[in-house]
Length: 152
Image (tube, rainbow, N blue to C red; front, side, top):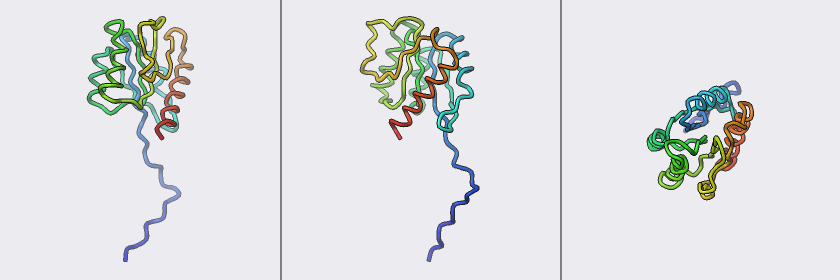
């Protein structure tokens, strides 16, 4: 006869929860530094953020090909070329099949009408100059909360 399962200890620590994987892709070292500063202490749903910084679409694609799908992608569209950010996003969604990641496109200017993002499930397009540190934290928290709600 097997013994009953032990009762849960009311004082036991909750199981460790993995951090949110956030991939930040921008060719401007200043934007990467500001992003790290803004997001380093953010917690969403009792989870920290694990920030990964990439300086190019090629660097980001290499990371994506060798890691699990990120929870959030903060993406500058104009990296090595004017369309390399959009190409990276298309590769992530179509070739790698990463469809759950929320995507925030960050732009230093207007997103070109020629850049079609309609089929790539972009959560939001935000201007780099218009969004301060506090607002970036809020936008990231909302995107991660939406991801959690969509794929709970």
